[in-house]
Length: 615
Image 1 (cartoon, rainbow, N blue to C red):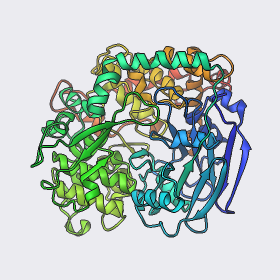
Image 2: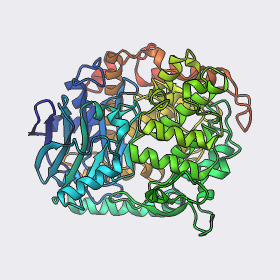
Image 3: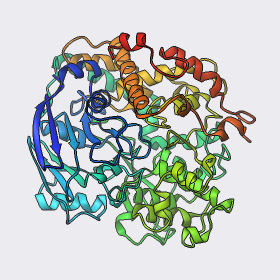
Image 4: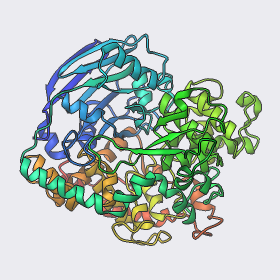
């Protein structure tokens, strides 16, 4: 139970759709979603494959709790070999598409090959077909969504699509569902575009059965009570969203600013959650109008925002004046502090473009920040940029660049390469703030030591959601640790990584773990599925998933040398704030981490570790 037991395999090359049974042996070992699809991918493709070739596969996958009454049980992931990184990629998204996929009768969709012309998948209650997408090729995510719902007269249909960025294989293009939720990182949208697959449109009217409904209802109700009574999930996130972190991280001296030249941003207050809630403009309305929830979510951290059109005159589209998908912390940091822009309206506008055209705002903002430093140093000039002056703090440079990248035009094509390839192109690789080719997010490892090890060892490239040690080091959840010491951080990172791997495989949102521990999650999984699922089994499953991903990357050609950080973070000390004078102490943490993982000194899982985890 918890599963439909069906996989939809879509052969894009031959234009066919066929059903097959879910591999329940693998589900028993890898739980679901991130873990299960990673197992399928590892078994079905050569890890050395070109991510944008027809031989790569793209997997849409749910977890066993997706579509159930568990709080936040609406998640799905897209798993593939990432276009941005060449590493294994798993991008997690909320909204409603994941639940709709389960309601339509499937746990997973595997796309393989490449269509001869643009197509979209139309899936209604167990019936799937590939249809011509020529009319919507070259259109935005938002226009694609509206066209599909109108054509099929299905207003309750849920759509995941790529914009022009994905079609043109911008390397950090994402897949957007429900207009503003996204499988956002590692370039999964570029892989989708390489397959000539424009969209996945789903409508389902079924349900999800669980193994022990009475126990499941109790466990989920208990879990919802914990979320409601917690200060973060019951108050902070519903009121301010993730943007509540902007001022907190700035004051902690861990806000990467001006392409990580600095660790604090003077304009942080101007683009914070508090600023979003303040009245402005003639109508006196704030940027933030309301919050919004994904399927089954009792937290509701999503944002509905309004642009002050009088302040920011470049906006000439009414749909941009008032749209869901307002700024979240990572986007606000990347579009703001990383580029030095403190214009809230400009950030909101750029964020709407990322939603509309399918761009990862973290990679976009960080890449633009690197381009601004290249411009500042005279490495690139107005001739390279087409006259666009890429100065730190320029709202015009931010918004115009978002437009150019979204449509893959002009200098936008260069920015669309991502920070690593762009900086390599201009002979300045040291200015790329990336790990394994992926831009790191909104926490400076000099101010939060554990995040340095987190970024360096993340299997999908730099990522905060693989091991959010900020929870402990800054917020004191589940217990407070000192952000400025590397002592004990190897064990902390491993524990977070294993637990998060399990949570990502359930169908639940990782934000629940601000309040929940695995003690809260295990009873929900146990009641939904057959067999015994306790905390120990979840942790072992998470560790198995982490090592499976590591094996994939090793076979893809990654080595110990890729478990590192940009030299700036290892050599240039923080200039201000509580971490002033500090660099990241990765050299001390990494060997201890390898030892705790049961890996060799070169970062390779030992035979003993592989045997223990049945790998």
